[in-house]
Image (tube, rainbow, N blue to C red; front, top):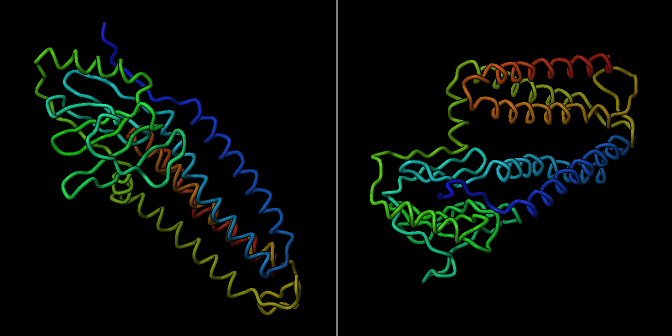
Length: 296
């Protein structure tokens, strides 16, 4: 019996990405706590800069972790399906010219600049006509698939078994007349933006987040090293904590956006996306109300 489902090596990649995500989250909470106790100035700005870098890195690492978990190479009737996270490439077997190991190539592959164990991903240009897309977890055992259009680099856990499976399928000499499909994560953003309810909710959340941040920046005026007077009030409060409110609101908006996009990819779960995106303007309004009551 021919194996039809193959997976990339996952253990080291899972351990690394889980460790990085947990480490970044702990570092982020510590930095936020330190920033809330630090007067606005150079040290405060450094804390915020590092915090923003961490906040941008965590979704990136989480998606790579999700991609590794949801990764497979499957032989279907007339098709080889490559799956990595939200990325799906279905290649008609009739379009495959050959599959060989990376060590047997007569040329060198241009590898992605940023790669970690469990995430050898990205698209690089081989020459003017060809692109190489990496959907692999490691360089060891890398297989290269050349099609009539592009080149794909994958890393099944058992490369020899994968090659044997492809050889046996090829020897049948018969492929169902099927057409492949290509699904990319970027298409999900385009689909969501094409939905009027989604565009309205996201637009409202984004506008209120920007408006809230602008109001805080305009209202806060330096009065002392760690105290600020807001507006025309003579009451002094901790300006650092007030300054962090729009940052917290922005983090929530980005988190809400990404989780909503995850649910938006399926028709049956899109209602959850709309409900999530509906909370973003509400949370911004609550943050604004809290800051207003604190000031006045």
